[in-house]
Amino acid sequence: MKKHFELFLLVAVIGFVSVAKIQDKDQTPYVILISLDGFRHDYVEKFNAPNLQEFINEGVSAEAMLPSYPSKTFPNHYTIVTGLYPDHHGLVDNSFYDSQLDIQYSTRNRSIVENPAFYGGTPLWQLVQQHGMKSASYFWVGSEAPVTGSFPDYYHIYDGSVPNETRIQAAIDWLELPVSERPNFMTLYFSLVDSQGHATGPNAEETKETVLEADRLIGLLMKKLEAIDLPVNVIVTSDHGMHEIKPEKDSYMTVQELLKDFDEDKFRFVSNGAHGHFYSEDKAYLNEMASILKARPDSDKFEVYFKSEMPAHWHYGNNHRVGDLFIKINPGHYLTSKNRKDRAIQNQEFHGEHGFDPEETEDMGAIFYAYGPNFKSGLKIDKFRNIHIYPMIAKVLGITELPEIDGKLEVLGPIIRD
Image (tube, rainbow, N blue to C red; front, top):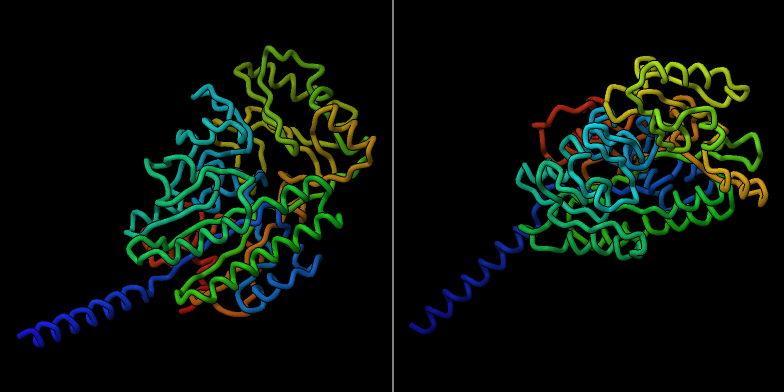
């Protein structure tokens, strides 16, 4: 009797181990979406980044990915994970004013960044939750707010001091969780290339060194993934490129100079460097302001638009958070403070900036590279808009029921293996 029981126990244990092994070999695809903030479309070739070059050769790469307008960090990161233009998801800029909430959005204000009232659409991390999968985010715009009432299953409040290697290890740790707890979709965010590009411009040796460090991080992640027997797909992208601003007096406009002829009690102005928003209920005064701006001797540095006049390809201007009057600074110029202008010229500092029209400024082009079992190999594709990433990731994860979005599956669907 004892021997029969022991045999039964052995069979049960073997059966349990076999079931656990089968579960651990779960073949549901996994997607890691990575942002290298400010990584311009030509940096890999320009600075000879070896790990990303190998990634490109073995996977899918786009000539460039076009950011949505304006080519700023917050609206574009949120566009990537919602499939919506900024005008439609509501995060219309890095800084803007919402007259209905009577709040000025600022990326540096923690309580505002975590306020779900500013975020529309259904982020990918919540889409996968709605379809029975878990999600994770080691930083991404919107992941710190309970959009549609919930957060990613695993997430972190943004802290730029967290070592980049820690973020990579977190993705590995998530993939090593038991299958029932393991996220099928996760995001990783790295700011180093953007920070250096702003500080020294896109052509500096310091920027090259930082690009190569970002390249090393991608190589580190891919090496760690080799040890994990799971169908993991990696997408490396960025929110925008970077445009050089030369240390010349003509390169800069100051906010003080821009507003000196106006009665500041009659309007609110929010600057974003490559453009600015004027808000006012006094339409007659807005018309007067537009006329004065267009008559300025330096009007070749900018263009002025009312919402109804904005270029159609921007898909921008219907949201109430966009300024009633809008000033677009032309490439090669930038709107800043007097102190920053004086410092840049005095010290002969080259800087990098973004926010410009991607169709007017090639430097705004971002990157899109994809590698993994669900992607074709050695495929190069034409430029496309970043709204199309959302439905492609959903397809890889087996999700066919999508909310209303601007992105179309037919754009990136062909990069997926049959």
